[in-house]
Image 1 (cartoon, one colour):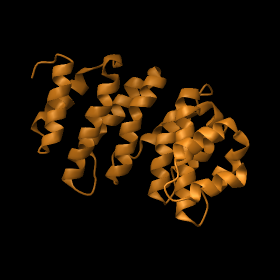
Image 2 (cartoon, helix red, strand yellow):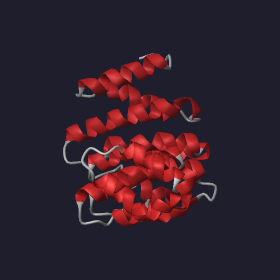
Image 3 (cartoon, one colour):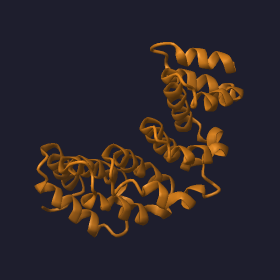
Image 4 (tube, one colour):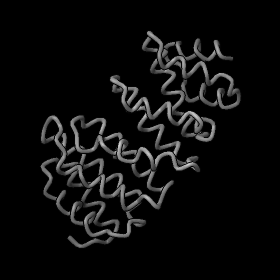
Length: 213
């Protein structure tokens, strides 16, 4: 299966989600996926990352022992691998009985203030999942997401886009937030956001939670 899985991934248009399901049934192929991350061939490199990401979503317990591998990927100079690691680590928090995530909390959320909006967006988007899997971290996660307004990205428009991601993230765990005040004020400020889709998200959020504005 080891060699086979790489050959399947290398095929153009291969179904990574289906391959992930096969690996879950045959875990001995995992080693090939981890080795594939360092392949010189982009199709294999990114295919292996995506397959591992699917596995982390469907069966995080299977990858949990490799938690540190994905933490190291957060420092990758390859943004695609970094973004994948951000998502995978969030999935792994569902299996994080050893509280490994708590040890890297600051590192994980350090991307929100900038400078790369897409990296911050992936972090903000994944934050909701972490909040639901680790409710004791909700207040800390909330404070990290709120840093988005003062972030230093490439452009002001990037900040606007990231604020939209923040609204989407908050909407997934808002009811579980104890100190809702700062979040409500943040959402209300987005009613003046120059980006129309963000204003609409803010309006929808406030209506959904019956907050006057």
